[in-house]
Every structure is written in structure tokens, then in C-alpha cells.
Image (cartoon, rainbow, N blue to C red):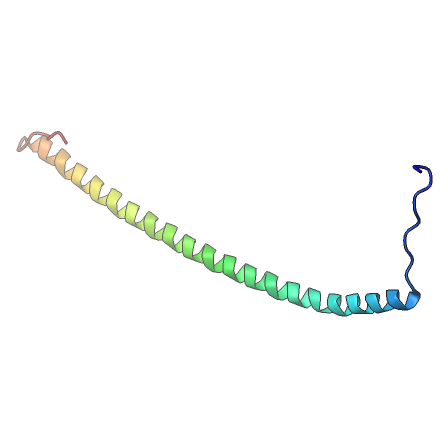
Length: 91
């Protein structure tokens, strides 16, 4: 039995041609449909990237502002310490 595999079932040429024509009709719309789906996906990813990017820049601007404030406070404390007006405080 192992040496004699069963032959595949054959179908009529007319049946094969109708399946091929149906498949080619379906396939002709597939590239356009795929293109639309890919364009939508790329637009969605682009919008998400732009949103995340702007959030990151906003956070970086906030950090920069806070660091500038901290630097100004440290500078002011340093100048006060040199003048002898106040002693540094522990936080």
C-alpha cells in the first residue's frame, strides 16, 4: 500500500477554468484592496507617531524648563551662601 499512493481526483477542464476565472476576478481586486488597507495602516501609524513625537517634545520642554528653574535656584542659593546671609538648608 505504501508503494501505490492513490491518484489525485481529477476534475473536468471546464470546472478548472471556471475556478481560475473566479480566482482571477477576485485577485484583480485584491491588490487595490490591499493597497487601500496598507495606506490606511500607514496613515494611522503616521498619526500615532506624530502624536507620540509631540508628547515627547512637550515632556522635553517641560524638563528643560524645570532644569532651568532648578539651576536658577541653585545659583541663587550659591550666591546667598557666598554673601553669608544664609546657610544652606537640607531638604
